[in-house]
Amino acid sequence: MEESLNCPRCGNEMEVRSIGRATVSRCPDGHGVFLARAELGDLIDAENDWHTSGGGFHTAPLPRITADMNAPPPSPAKAPAWIATLFH
Image (cartoon, rainbow, N blue to C red):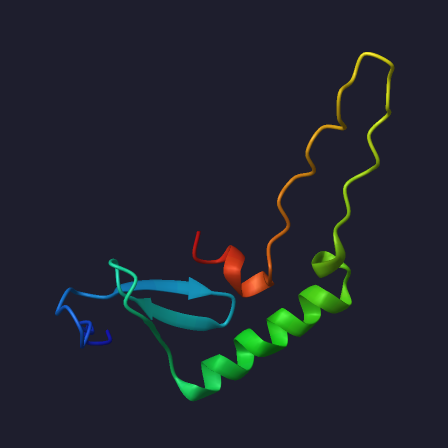
């Protein structure tokens, strides 16, 4: 079992999360994310796969415009990157 890490900024115990093949330690107060160098490569590969598979290019279908509408309904928010979806 790995020894837990503490955030170097606030001293809180880091939350450990497995993401695919990588293990990420994250400050619960948002001060940082820490991981091994090899695991960063795994996350970069996963990010590239997400974009290649079309996950990064989601588009909402165009809404049907009707006479009683003032404006089309808002489109759902698009994640800026796959990695951003992991920490929400």
